[in-house]
Image (tube, rainbow, N blue to C red):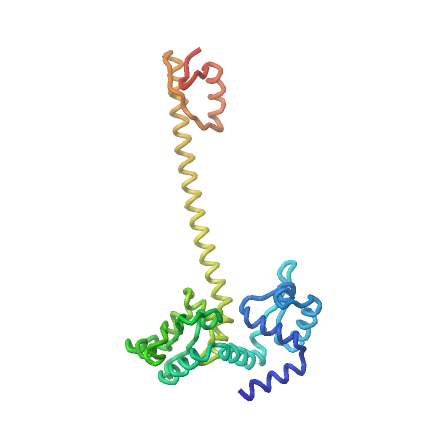
Length: 294
């Protein structure tokens, strides 16, 4: 912790209070980048003040800016040597904001489980977001390197917490956690508080950008397939309607030759059928629900 606060002091010496607030906001929103207008609105600070702070932070190599069309988006530069210490500092501050009773339960759990084969342990859900109530449970995510955990592990976690505190442990193998994430994994990555191996969560947030791209590409591919199927169905429906029109016109022409009445038909026509309809309309008069010869 001493090293963390040394890094913070060095950053404070180079940046203003506004800059630190910008850094906190960008860390909290990662991996989503933000515009200067969004930062100014969220921090209730002038846009010019935000832009000066961003310029200082870019000079430190802590913030990156990227133009996308007419917008300029700002985010944390993951390669900066300040990212690790700042991430741990902000993570620790969020942990201290957790209610003391919950922190005591977490410390009992972390002191009683073997973390040798764990890639990370995360607190997520309402306890991590600061929206918990007195009766809220503790959601924890355990990621195992080899994916093998004892069936007694989850009951052990619940027992360590105490009988009066409900804990919901979610266990994942490293491969499953790093695959396209489910809602639990997304919540853990975006809003979680790291309790073991902080660098894992920092990397997971950075990697989430590429995961999102994979998800979007998969959805686009799904949309493309649906569009192709719909296009094929439209072609088949059009062919079917043209067949109906052809049959209907043939029946009308047959009626004209034989001099009998014909029930009114709802006909959709285009192309070559239009000329036939125009000719037939001169010979037929529509009366009520039936088509009669003139």
